[in-house]
Picture 1 (cartoon, helix red, strand yellow):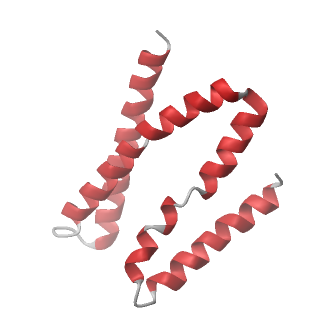
Picture 2 (cartoon, rainbow, N blue to C red):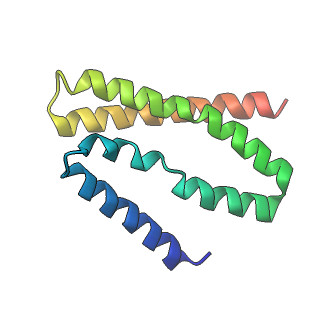
Length: 113
């Protein structure tokens, strides 16, 4: 897949989120990022270049990767009540980064056994 095609997909997702956030169905904007746009690309590339076993490993890791996103959502839910929005978003993103780093460290320790 060309880099331009990937950029077009990303831009389309951003446009859909922006349009939904201005509509009566604004809450659906929270569902759009979970559409597996980039997952489809990643899974195709891994499956095509590394094989089915590598793809299965990637899929299992992807299941665990939901945890940092849940931590992001929960921390943002709490933080928007006590911080201004930019600080809450930044802090929740930091929580995601810590959780993602911890996931990678634990995965490498567990998977390398």
